[in-house]
Length: 435
Image (cartoon, rainbow, N blue to C red):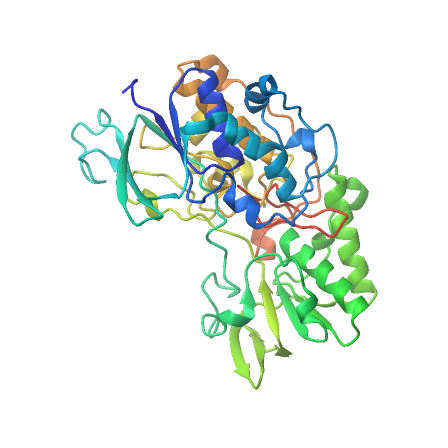
């Protein structure tokens, strides 16, 4: 087993940091990235500005790997996703070199010669990763351990309030987007609706509100599932992430100035095609008519399909790793109040498997990049046999008391993944994106 690599799924921020920590400890790694470049998901929201500052966006082992090459860590400022990639993630991937395989999608992970139900000799068998390449060919990778850092970007939540696509949502797919918009000029003079209460939705509202300011006749309707907008606008001076506080303040201004029509307690049940537009119907019978386009920004969820032949333990509500669910529950915790979660908490029934990064948080919107870096530091120490370092907590987060619980609000608390908007009207994917 010791001669086999540790397989890391995803060359995003946490996947690359995990590779840096393991490489530093002399452990062979192979990173499998479905995109053609490092941090491909981050690149898709390159226009988004993070609310975390540069010192919170780089990993210690990654810095140690990069500094001998002449690279220096940006000291201050709030980068866009594109800047995060070009100034940190891409150089880190270059430093890791041939340890990363691009254009490779993991379609399944299992134990060699064992499906999920087989007990005999299970723990003594290595992992097998089934991989599909961009040219259509297939291969298998044998690994001693697996770190799943594949994120949640590929699986956005639907607009439907009950967790499934609303009636007519699939049929109206050409008029519904599930990502933060970049250029919104094509919607000048149109009626656009935003569904969601998180930072992604707030960012879209800011862009569309500015469009309404420039282009009279543009209408923006913001649909919230929750009954009150109080927590949507953040905590102002109480928020220790100032860029996040600025986002909420600007969104409130858009509403106060009448550039955005805020509708609370609206849970989407159906999309109806009427003439050249859509009518959005709520569970209570209310409707919003003559909508040209909808931005459904209701969060992301983990895709566990590739893990179906492994024994995993996820929280039934959050779909987060069960061992950390109570620490990240948005009914209780904000982004900054979670305790450190390391290898012990992230361990799965399948020994040697770890789900990390934003994917480990499932549907909880309280993930920050620093949390993910602490996760992979602890996991690397555990895999190297340094159990003292694995158990040690090195995480320090900015605290804030402005987050509300998903149980009350229906589509998540006010926190978000690391890539989240700032004062300059930039916003997050992924957030939870943030991986």
